[in-house]
Length: 189
Image (cartoon, rainbow, N blue to C red):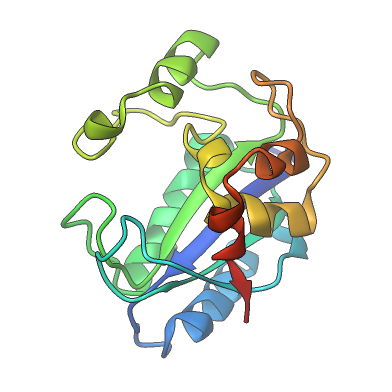
């Protein structure tokens, strides 16, 4: 592709050290890696300390969100993220397990992938199935973003007015709808 695509939001997180150092340094290096891959970083949220999810699964996380733009398709962007995760020692052994680096596409402009029905199916997946079921394709917007303070609080730092194309709510509105204790548990570093 020869033209820039819409803005995308990338969630960054980690709770284990990598070759770059502790999680905060790993996230900073990942931002440099995103730029080195040809993406333009438009904004980066503050870094936040967030409780491990699910509770008790390991040390607390460092989380952030960046807005990026590039010439890549959503699938090409996902490949870049997986390459950067691998570079920093990400091992995909357990769903929602501890990790050196986790990079997720939260949204790609207002794209809904693969279609509204499949996105809604994954968004409405019961909690017990979320632990075991893994989609075989890219689902956008990220089907869990509206449920997670550790995503929405940093997203509101950089894109509070972004509106979910299916839910019709802004990032700020989705964040305000979360439990107060969930929001309070997300602390700026």
